[in-house]
Amino acid sequence: MESQMGEAQTELGALKLEVKKLLEENQRLTTENEQLRRVLKRETGEPGSDLVAGKEAEAASEEERKADVIGEGHDNLARLYHEGFHICNVYYGHLRTEGDCLFCLSFLNK
Image (cartoon, rainbow, N blue to C red; front, side, top):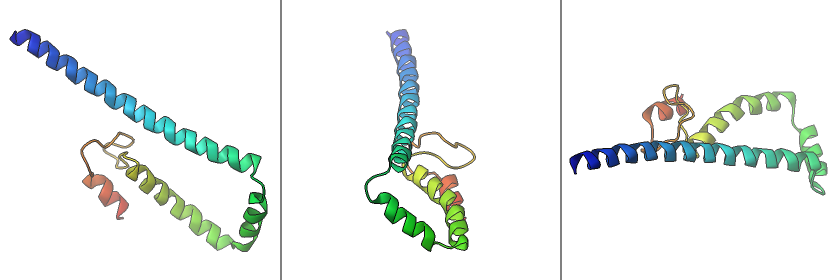
């Protein structure tokens, strides 16, 4: 009976790892799908969106564009962290399963 319990525990551990991998892949594919939909929407263009986007682009100066690009990377990392992924160099890209990560939080606060 003890050996059966040991085997069941080993199998449960393997199943947990598989579920974790599937959740990470699902989140990655969901994020990629959302990004592709945004790109498709931008390329096909919605009625009136090109006109508004064109006026906004003309109004932005070159310095504002550079500042947006610099802040965009930080925003993307913060978004990834809030979606449940590690952004620290220790566990980068892995799903956060146990709450907040101090490494990630210190990285965000830099």
